[in-house]
Image 1 (cartoon, rainbow, N blue to C red):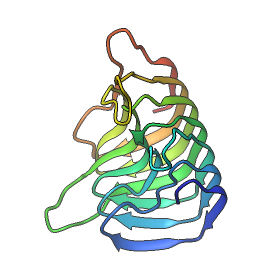
Image 2 (cartoon, rainbow, N blue to C red; image 1 turned 180 degrees about the vertical axis):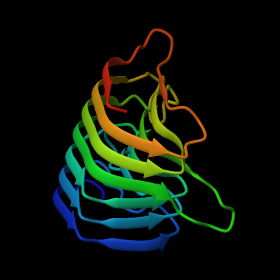
Image 3 (spheres, helix red, strand yellow; image 1 turned 90 degrees about the vertical axis):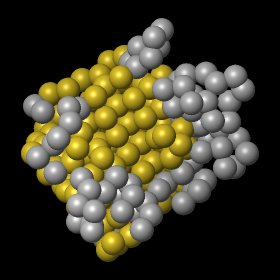
Length: 191
């Protein structure tokens, strides 16, 4: 979905997808619920690319009651982050690695990444169980600067992550900013 408003995705099943499962891109007012997504790439990935020829946000998104299996990231917000992200809730999901012939583990259970100038604000992640992902939580502010001249870092703030259970991880979770651009108001509880 690119530049869509008022989207409801309910009860969708995707088996062994060879790309991302569901990618709301520059979308507003999106509800994804009761889905089973099996993907070799990201299961659910919110994006805000420059595809519409302007910076447009992705906002007011809920993802709930989903089972996600992947070799990449399960719940992801960003990387493709020219526009902002705000008012996002991921709740009541289970995550595990997608079996493949290379026996790869999922990269991250939850990934939040601003690398192209996006301001990411008001994200709530709660009640997530995951098994066999490399890093359960990956939060990153970077400055790749795609579609920006000059590259300018965005912000990451007001993120609440609670009630996360992860087993079988092989790497530590990571919350990382860049010099002069700290992350603000990141809350972790019952992890």
